[in-house]
Amino acid sequence: MVGQSPYLAFRRSLSLTTRAWLAATVALAMMIADWRLHWLEPLRDGASVLVRPLVALAQWPQVAWQTFDRATRDVLALQQENAALKRQLNEAALALRELEGLRRENRQLRDLLGLNPPPKVRVLPAEVLYDAPDPFSRRLVLDRGAMHGVREGLAVADARGLVAQITRVQPLVSEATLITQRDMRVPVWVEPSGVRGVAVGNGDGTLRLRHVLGRWEVEVGQTVVTSGLDGLYPAGLIVGRVVQVEPGGNEPLVVIEPISQAERVKQVVILERLDRPED
Image 1 (cartoon, rainbow, N blue to C red):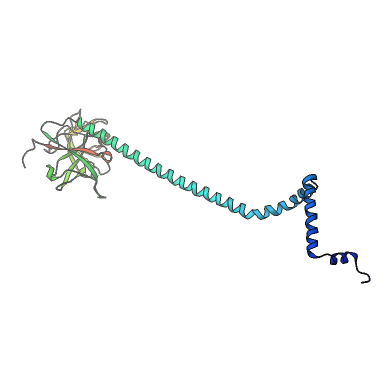
Image 2 (image 1 turned 180 degrees about the vertical axis):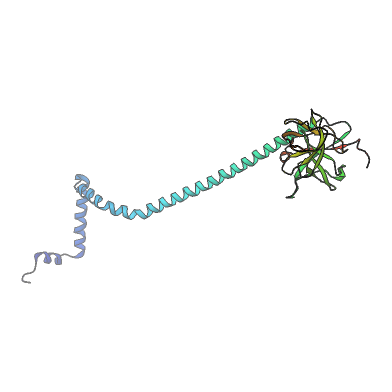
């Protein structure tokens, strides 16, 4: 054909198979030349620089997912470790509280073993089970009742002194009202002045000395003990110490702080006078 390109004529004169073998031969020759003479290294380096951002962009979702997964696993591991540490801390704190309670109980037991009760007094050891659920009075529930020989009016003491009085008795347990409860009355005398009177509960954790026989010769710091004149309380039990004296009128204000801390008492003794007059 007139005006036909020699290149087009060449292309049409070669079959597909021939062209494929020719291309393969050229490619193989270039590979051998590159292997021996490293002709294509600059081309590969340049191509890698151009392709690198595309590779990084293609890998970004996988890298982001791996980072998120690792962070999530770390957070979960920290939360689990934190929960385990809190549980161990709570268990250690509970064990420490139990240990402190046992130490306090053992100390009270040792003190009670060293208690020297007055003569002709029956001593019945008891344990405080809990505080009676009464918002208007402070009472302790003891693990001794009528079947153990407990009756109303008996004194309850710890190793330091008088704590309460039995006011309710059931077959297996009993309730003791604290001597600081309002209107609770304990016949007492003050050492060393010898002043006698009645300690009356104020309801606020203290007592007030009232109905004194004779002169009011009372000073701060003096010890108040049971007189035993009522036939219920054994004589000589420490009730507390005088912490306030304010003169005034016929009956000065004398405030007594109890010797025993009832909220910390766990082990007590119930005291019964054997020389108590018959009713």
